[in-house]
Length: 312
Ligand code: HEM
Image (cartoon, rainbow, N blue to C red; front, side):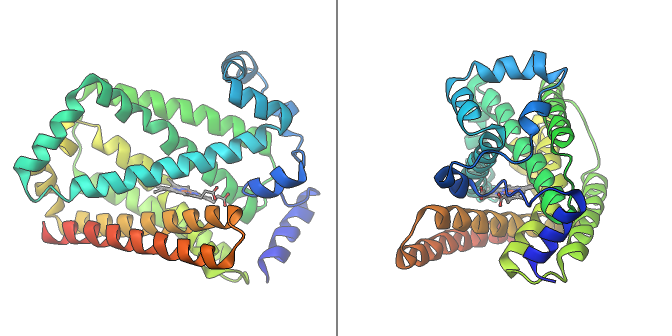
């Protein structure tokens, strides 16, 4: 079955046309309004009294929500969060490449003791969980034909808030312990199940392999990335002391999980960046050049990440 047939079959089940949150450019140029009627239903209680007044105080968000609709704002937020995550992941891989030299790594990590960096580390939870859960919502829409957008969005915002608060709580307590092997075994098995469910659903569809792999990596990362962030803040030493990181990464299972994580994140990020560039660049020649540059950059960072994991 082709991807378009698959989508329209799912759309037919629900009586709604396929709704591509990702087509920011298309909606910008066609001035198309949101199709789901979600604007009226999204912000019911408690969101109407709590979330909406806050969001409406932010001038840019309020302007685009009024003129282009909430789906447009959410699609743009997903995109911006994705780009923030790419920048963060590249800096993270670069910093981790110093783990094999503990004096340098520990000196760099002293920076994260400063209040400003603690706040920035906490704030990172916002783009991470927003992109993850909104990505999950998109998968439910595109691949599973779920059309209950308003309820999904309310769940998404609710879970985002719980996660960000949980992250703050763990960072404040900073005294939790767990066996890394046990923690990652549970998260890895659950992520593997999500991967299998999504793969079995899209395997037979005719469509770009890159598109399929991006959705498959998204399904796998849905739990892995938020869990990674929480794990790293159970205690400051877990991520900030080279010797603790080295001891953990000498475990063959943890090495394996880290390798899969680096490769899937970089593939997902690369495909995302190339998709974004295709939305804005008309010239095929420039498009190809930029795609090659993105691939080159991610291969270099992939190599740095894989090398760090293997030499520890
Ligand atoms: C945590 C789990 C994640 C999930 C569930 C997820 C899900 C998704 C989905 C479904 C898309 C396609 C959106 C579309 O076509 O409109 C996407 C796009 C993207 N993702 Fe992720 N993602 C995750 C993590 C990441 C990470 C860690 C990065 C960066 C390292 C990243 C970077 C991107 C980028 C740059 C795009 C392109 C955005 C766009 O086209 O608007 N994602 N993600």
